[in-house]
Image (tube, rainbow, N blue to C red):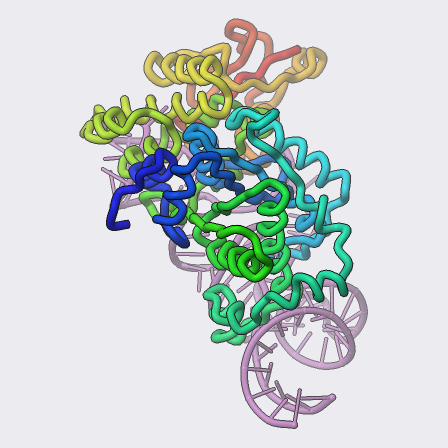
Length: 415
RNA sequence: GGGAGAGUGUCCCGAGCGGCAAAGGGGGCGGACUGUAAAUCCGCUGCGUAAGCUUCGAAGGUUCGAGUCCUUCCUCUCCCA
């Protein structure tokens, strides 16, 4: 880290704070400078979409492409079939092949907004292509003999387990080997020289480099990002309502915008650097805003980060909706909405049911409690009667505005 | 294979003489104060618009009554082999 990187790629990553560890910064810099650096990151397809927790690695691939490199998204179609052992106490149900396939599609869709795919551009490959056809004995003879158990035992992830006498299953041990082998395959097939990932992936990546050396690939490199926690110390991307998804089917664009808008003051600068592509001068200016003014920075952050995933138009619209709702205290037709059938509406809907239907509370019992605490509002009026029934009289511009607290609003419309 | 211990409110940790919808935290949500922030203070945190119903690893049993006692089973941890 003594000398500043010369390549655009590493220069950007360093000044924006993406780099936690690198196996050989100078060597990688040379390689990037020579042009055509191919790097990849692996993603499991266990979930129906990606959430903000994966955003950091995604940004790495994006920067790689922007600075002239070639990013590869490695989908863990093969490894997912085995089941990642790290999700331990849950009885890990094996995902059906159909689920894996549909999750993979969703993954593709998310990446489409971050990377350019096509001839000579970004690539999306599935490790099922080579992993599922492996023969156990052949694999042991050709690849397995290169793994040094001595080395693997010395790795932090393994060592910790052993020292604490925690069990480490053979499957887990092999998961690491699969990942290492992926690196070699990607090097051979596509000339990938760099694998990136979160700091927890360090051991796995380095094992891949080691395997590559023994199996005669060109020099491989590792680069990891810092583990991202919020200023209040919690893990990023999980809220009580669930993960902050990157696809609008799972999380409305407005809610995504709100997620960024509501970040801690202390996170603004870092997030601007990591999750937007604003020039450093601009991020520094915004970060320096104090007191009330920091809110302007948060709006910029929210809009920029949202634009990256959902497009500029959608982001601006979310910003506009927020302005109406929070700064003018008005309803907005663009708030997330939930529809109920006309017949149901005609008969009158109890408020408890209405709020549950809107997804603002999980159960009618919870709705009841929230009413006692004064947290629910109908058309901006605090709700006090849990027996109240909503009907046509409550419609304002064809919808009823239901609110939970100051921030969460949903429109209920008859359809 | 032998011995010791543990699994509690579907977020986590964690008390629980046979009367328990179950102490206490953390987290989360809501309210007040603010700036849609942080900190602080207060409230809520099983389902059910009622009666009531269902929770303490699983299944049985004892009892008017079981998280608590008995039996079997499952899972995890520790010690010996």
